[in-house]
Length: 127
Image (cartoon, rainbow, N blue to C red):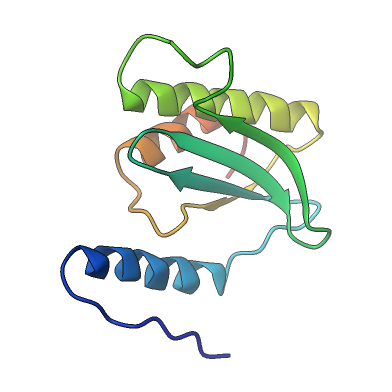
């Protein structure tokens, strides 16, 4: 199935480029019951992560920069991403998930995305 994303100019080009990368990634990545998908959504203000079983369409665990344990914490946005990664890994392990497939959501694997992934690995989640 062909997915078309209209090419734009200026700042809209970045948005469409991210959409194209995300579509390209999702062609090959899918979460199962054994290895659900760890989805990362990054905005300018914060970061969220979900562990999703795509076959059932259920979210098994989630964490956000808006959680009470993370909100108001010290540090920059990368430090927040590390806390979110550790929290989503802890909640996923509590839900019985040991290994996941990482979906970076069209974002580059650098900065906050890498910090979240590294923190989730250190917390015991296998990629």
